[in-house]
Image (cartoon, rainbow, N blue to C red; front, side):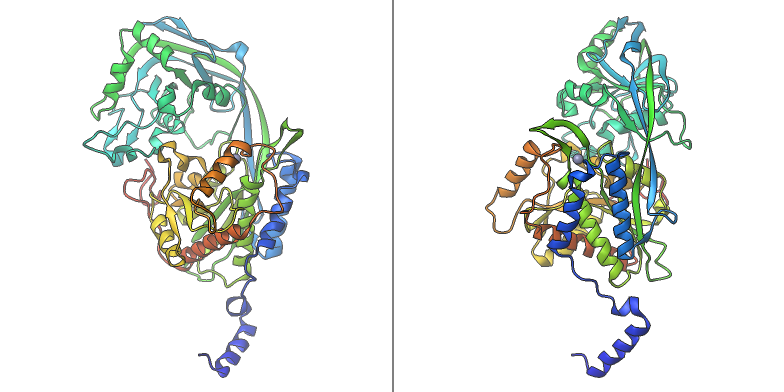
Length: 544
Ligand SMILES: [Zn+2]
């Protein structure tokens, strides 16, 4: 019970200190989410492709909304953090990939190899001996090092895709069934670069990559969007690429080496790099051009002097695919679910935070660009953060909101990697909700959403989405809806706004992310990575 006198005192105080005591923001409603969603999914934004008119309209809209909410500019005095994007495409007519020495062959592009520049230079080239480097992994948390002090500087590395398989006696090695970052293709090139290699080829098998060779051709034998080379980094690889299993096998056989035997060797901690005596000569020219897009960044300052330089980050990508090949007469890829819905949720959260009682820690709202081009906006943000990465408490990301009604569960990417998972599970448990374990951890989904950009720089991060157990729906309905979306609307012009969506699920999800962010912003605790996670906080321990 509160006495009338206390209430009067509170009212007087509230009049003096308006923001801290009196402010209580209007709750998030389905109508609010619907309003954002309608506009962001509109044909007028032409599918929100980076560096288009739709880009400019979207970022101006987001900045204006943040301004109206009372969210301050979060990127060094501006709402916009400009993101430069390089476009490179290798010229097929100039493509030269030839083996000499212990093996002689002209490798066919793109039938045997697909190679690309990896940085925006007019000509990519490397000529060096091929060294088989197993899985090409240096993973201290698994006491694993495929290089073992062997100098592969200036060599062309031949490496295997995926993680080394976990043996029966060590079922948790490299995450067991789950894929770790060491298994992903970007890691292979990053490690090759750290080792000072001249180039790197990953041996493709459909089974180990999880996709067929024509996906390799479709993804890399074409124009690529990348971030400009960070001048603070050492020299890039001369080229990156994939080679088919049969082409690699044939090359090695000429040199008296058996790829299947090398594969077995590579599954052991005792593996050491194997020289092949084969020289590979790779050269091609690139067409290079440049674009500019922007991340939209806002901040709500923390109320506690000791905590306000610590930031809880919330992120969601605003971009989609733009205008593309027409399907059923429609060429605008609206990306209503992917990801106008996540952005709508984040806008609503930002409004409530700005208008509600100020959190102890600051909150940073990051609407990132070019996710569809390979997480470029979030990677740029993490590499050039407006506040130091060491000051970021956590990143909570949303890619895809919930437009199908309330659920009893959440899908969370990264819940098994840091203390954020158990903390979120504890937060939703009193509501009768749970986190559903990831169904296909071997697919490496954790590494393919924007929260990963934060993980890479050591910030504990998760992507939070609805689960598949919907209130008032039979078992299996949610999964079926998900499969239907993937088959018929994912990355298609039919990912469109619908006035009959059940946005109570969006409100539920927004409120969960909001209250999780508030919990993280209220405390003094720092979420921590699990011991066997590939990522650790940089300030305490350099990552890898
Ligand atoms: Zn997408």
